Length: 477
Ligand code: NDP
Image (cartoon, rainbow, N blue to C red; front, side):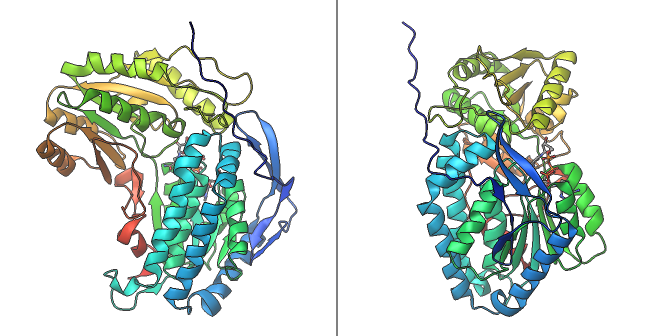
């Protein structure tokens, strides 16, 4: 008998999506000066969700001025204990409206509701709670007795964790006394606009948070605006480099959180079943649209056969399909453009001689979909071992000795994250000292906590987000 899950659809009527959205500037929603809009679609169905205002340079200017006025008159001089109240309020409203946010995020992004409900939204609220706690304790953060905010922060975020990245950017900036102009990604603007609605509901003073939706040009206008004191960017290394060039010599502060090509290193003494769960979570969480995804599996040669076999068996059980179904593990790829990139790099993997495997799975007829994919027989020079695919594609390489594992793990221009699976604590520490990455997970993967700093080395960027270190990026120290 073939046994299957019954459908468990999450109702979408908890969210009401407007036909049109304006920019959020100075506490109010308004159309862009030019009247231009762009369309955001549901990547799982290609259904049009809404028309969203595209901010031009005049709108960005208005937002930066509003943020400056709010900083100088209200938010900067406000005692930390008062700022904390607003952050707590935002955190609590996020919790109260959690399901609404989760459904909206899943509709606009394509990620499974299981993840938006259990990861993105709770973590976003946790970031506001955590930073609310810092707002009146900045003088104890180790940055001097009276650390001052920088002023106006321009914040540009990607489409993979739209709400969570907004929280990562806004919460520390606001706690430190800065005001913000946030530019969400073009394909996922809706949860940032709902967060703007939460700011209104929380009675946040006008101009403290502004949301200027639009494409790359909007981000570029924000970066080059002379009224911005700090740019915080998360996205591709290519755009990060462009931003660094634009900011050079202006005196603006900059933090960049860019791409990655993380090694997930499995030693032969690791608990293999747990490691397999960690490998699956490392690369298939959020369809692999994760900058710190464990996209290179480095497995010790003596256990490579059993690990790959168990991995394939586990992947066979993953359910791909309707992101609003509560049983779904793998949702849609966020955009046609990203799907093309994943297809192109996967084809390059085959052309370069690696063996490709995907489970039998039916892809939905509409929308952007890619099956979970594993490449074995990958060599370090292959593009799939070097380039960030940003999709559900795992490259498997092997090693024999710990030294070889370190050399291979570090053989990348990136340095964002890594995973180590072994039962020996001493080996974990030995590896952690040698792996050139900002985060090293031991016997787990993709764990996030607002108290724990996150960020990279080299082409993965610089600066930290989260924890005490993350506050530094928004303080004049
Ligand atoms: P981008 O780096 O282009 O997008 C990130 C953000 O920057 C978006 O809000 C984008 O706007 C904006 N932006 C684009 N161009 C500029 C510019 N010149 N100045 C200022 N802001 C700009 O990433 P993509 O969405 O194009 O994805 C491309 C690749 O980047 C992916 O395939 C993936 O490999 C990698 N990536 C890595 C991420 C990470 O967290 N490390 C996150 C996202 C992507 P808009 O969305 O409108 O283009």
